Length: 297
Image (cartoon, rainbow, N blue to C red; front, side, top):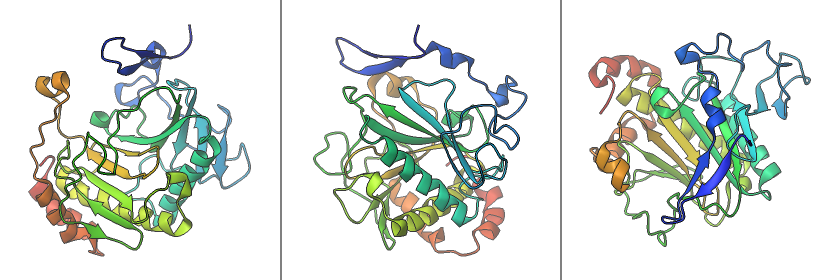
């Protein structure tokens, strides 16, 4: 039997992935993997698809891309953010974050003609992370599979683009939509529309790297250091980056109806973000506010 299979419900027409082998993937948090497969010293354990820094097979790399051993799509890769087992976007140097987004672009443009390119990051147990060494997953979904992802433009029936007050940067706009599904979710999208993520320029990558790092630092203040979250990059035209804190658990109403109950006013979310976005000494603020905000909103 194949590792995975895309199946469509004949009544609802919704798609799902049947992938029982993924139940056997390592989970350091549950003690099923004594050694981290993404740390230095494991470079020869599996094929390497791409790297930044050093010669293939050596341990002086900055970023590595390897196949996912437990795939659920025809192309399923792991982008390892850095050799550091603990540091993620909020703690890595900005130049390293830029390398990560540059790698996203490189992989996107390598595979963009093969299907729908979906880039996503899981962090923390509630975010679906099984291996805590920071990494991003890169999948290419067959074109006939409908991805139920809200669009950025107002022709989407799944998202009302009424927004809170926005933050403007040289290349991007940052907002928390009034119709957002998750508490404190944030959208980042380019000022220039009509493009895919593969079209992102070096200047935009530099700006986006700062934005992603700073937003996660700010959300640390709200939810606690290393809070659980997801982010994804919309795979088509008019792309965006959506960051979703995952401190909220879905209830039976949401699971059954698909209608989300958002208990956080997005306007207050943007007030909080704007208060701290330009603050240079974010680490000091983290320490001062950690006890006050704790975990959760």
